[in-house]
Image (cartoon, rainbow, N blue to C red; front, side):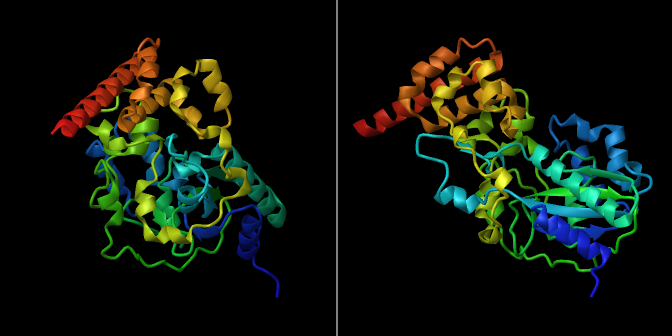
Length: 357
């Protein structure tokens, strides 16, 4: 039996490393009003680009991105399973936590190359160029709703898309196409049920009741998108996370089914972090993280995050490094290093007091 175009595309996507693939129409998202209210409530924090008029118009209708759009191919690309991180790679006791997706090379470059190859395959099958736009993570679209519509999973209580056979440890990617593909009719049932493990686990209480997040309280936002001070009232709750956060996904029972990471996203041992990273110069930071998503935080953000994590770890041996860091040319770094010293000293004073009682 000859494979249909849709079947051929999905098989090629699988060969390129995508573990899930589905098709949906180009109709506007039904839950756009949820996004608008999320913006109106200020839950996007300082991510002002999300609230720009052009961005909102395009998110409200995929045809504003690609007028010729007739179908949207939605795909999932696996990153390093969180459970493996807990049991193997990374995190010796003296180091700090980096979100699983950021342990390898920059996923944007890897996935976009695969999407380009998939578009070229589709054009070969059709026999002529096809109008298209493709994204992963950065496009002005509500990708989780599109993925849900395409049958890839359901949007969980922590706002992540969850697939019953792959958990939520994958990136979403989309190709808007100027050809008609058969849309998926299978809708995966929401299996969160009464479970609230992700909500309970979030140390900063960032998860909202309507399956969205208050970004202003989310550790991922605070360590990446936030370019200024980390609010003092949230610093102690951030633990030892220095780039991103996996806590809500670590709590999710569906991630016991996480797929193996694509080889392009296997962890890079050089990303193990230590307090000594406070001495990194701008040149050293850029060289070390040139292929890593961590470069998004820039040196000032990375050292800011590291200082907070060092303060939370409470090791007095790190105070000399922090005192040196107070002299950093970046006020943001200096300010958070000062907080870390005070946090460590306060913790040690409290311990000493308890010991005397």
